[in-house]
Amino acid sequence: MEKKIILITGATDGIGKITATTLAKQGHTMIIHGRNRSKAATVCEQIKADTGNKNVNYVLADLLSMADIKRMVADLKTKYDRLDILINNAGAFFNKQREITRDGFEKTIALNLFAPFLLMQSLVDLLSKSTSARIINMYSAMHKRGGKPDFNDFQLEKSYKPDRAYGLSKLYLVWMTRHLASELKRNGINNITVNGTHPGAVATNFGQDSDKGFFINMIFKIALNFMDKPEAGAVSSIYLATSQEVEGISGQFYSNKAEVEKPDDKYWSVENEQRVWNYLQKTLKAYL
Ligand SMILES: NC(=O)c1ccc[n+]([C@@H]2O[C@H](COP(=O)([O-])OP(=O)(O)OC[C@H]3O[C@@H](n4cnc5c(N)ncnc54)[C@H](OP(=O)(O)O)[C@@H]3O)[C@@H](O)[C@H]2O)c1
Image (cartoon, rainbow, N blue to C red; front, side, top):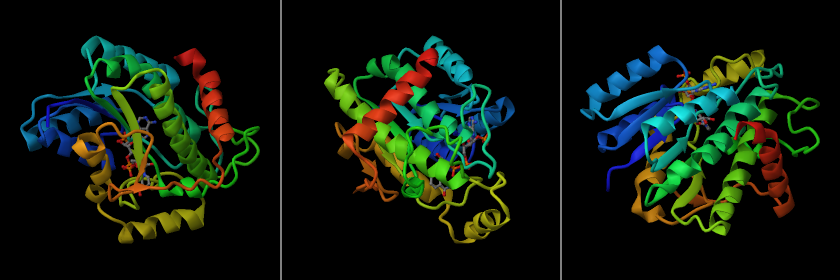
């Protein structure tokens, strides 16, 4: 495969770190995204040493801050004249109490949905410079578990629960991915595809630090013993980033075994997908 320039968010730990290391081993130019300078620098050096690939660098942003994302995008545009692959991997499951970011957004929605949306929109021009660019979004099987969407309560002020926030953030990410795939086609941008995958249940730091209440905290800890290794969670992202089989395919949902799967479409409709898209455009307009 031709060598690519690949940006992966949340590459300092868990599934993202494994994905980045594997892609670096294949000889691609890797841009590791992290939020902590010293952790990102250490991971970068570790990947270089483990793979022998010197083209591994990092960029920094707290993805809970839309201004910080904007600054990172500007930084990327000064350093790179094209981007071939964007993997929106970073994500988290937050506390039992609803929390908001400095921008005033509910944290789960901000990190799992707003950050990938903003990155995709802001990096389209850099991706357009690639002969064949791919965006890969990290879903979750929990997209089925958010309950019924309430478009009058998008920020979950009335109905916050951590599992609802997480489930809905991933459900909307699935819808947003599909919508972007058709938007790109409609606008004649044929060199960028966008797909997503869920990694399965994988033993990482995911959900380990947040306080979800005694019972759910315990379930998360016990579940670690039965989960797959992070390597298993990285299979599908690596496949979507590198396989010739997915060339030209866009708007699809892939399983952790890298097979096309049907997401839970119980609450999906053309109108609902458009509602989410419009909400994202309107809410994040100031940061685009
Ligand atoms: N593990 C699972 O079972 C599972 C299941 C379904 C879906 N997923 C999804 O898979 C993806 C990767 O999760 P993982 O299991 O690898 O989790 P993880 O081990 O917790 O790693 C998450 C990564 O995201 C980064 N991150 C978190 N918050 C951030 C922020 N505010 N700004 C910038 N970076 C941030 C972390 O940075 P630090 O290194 O600085 O902490 C880390 O690199 C997520 O989208 C998650 O929703 C995971």
